[in-house]
Length: 357
Image (cartoon, rainbow, N blue to C red; front, side, top):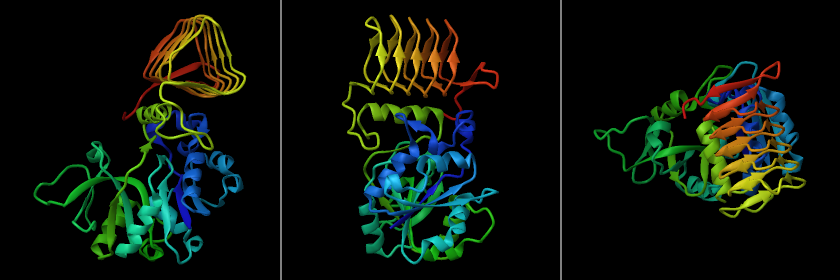
């Protein structure tokens, strides 16, 4: 089968992190998110993948290359001007052929069963099937209403409508399965969006659109807090790093060549990348992920924080609920909470508040 990874977006809510890397290339547990997506699709018998590009496109290409190391054949599609979620798929129309294909958002990390989604799609004769989730956050993401047979009767509402009852309401997971006939409904060379244009258009035209409730791990990294929450799920063992077993809940996992002072304290769960250094009397954890070559100074304290590769904390620094980008240096004795820390052009430390968390 084939699949589309939507990877062209700018990731505005994750700025300034997405001024450094595009969302699909952000590290999760020290591996780019795209590697998780590639492994997920390959496990579902997907062999060919289309990926649209725009924002920081070379970084996306760098993660997967031609796809051979992930067992995939990849076709990239660059958009000089963003074409929207549906328009990006339309631009790759010759790639899709005559078989159904999966679509997944580039900021989604999931382990749902694509085989069950495919079986349902084929059984009911759907033109487009959305993978749906029961989730208390559904109104904020957009509610999808389905009837007793699973046919979609309402799409992407942000409030409930008792006067328009549906048999059930769910959250759209960002994963769907398309029949290629849908492509002819999308105008070429103009921006077109799923929820605002394509889905309502298909409903109006009478296409059979269905929703299929799925189980299995799911999250997206679209905001700083959800980016952190995805790491905590990794530390809880709810999903695993590519090619590795899940972490044991409450464990400390160290990659090779870490140097840890005998007087340093690691409070699980913690994940340490290769070549980390932790100084005397420093406290790391709980809920901390250190990227490769991170340096934690003497007496520093770090909790509920993710540090990218090469970041460093001077002695006596305190971090709580922070995200620290690569090559950022946090000065001695500072205390930062719920901030994104990045390095400025002159090496100065820049602190940015979380957005839409």
